[in-house]
Length: 75
Image 1: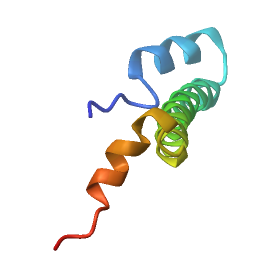
Image 2: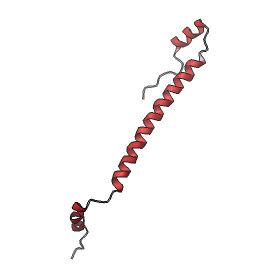
Image 3: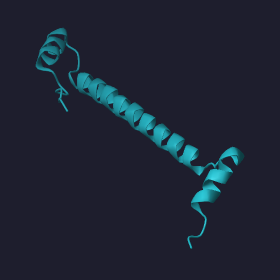
Image 4: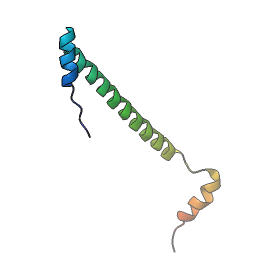
């Protein structure tokens, strides 16, 4: 993972020259980073739920004979 600095020096220096609060830059960068992490985690969770949902359905009636074949007792 490529890390980006929370407080890029060029933006900090220009904010100081304009008389703005440089801490606002850090807060904004943290907010954007956490938002991206939240979106990524949400997509992963939705994928896991989809897989769990698909695995929980019983086999369809048309495939029931195939399942019965595999469950036959051996002699």
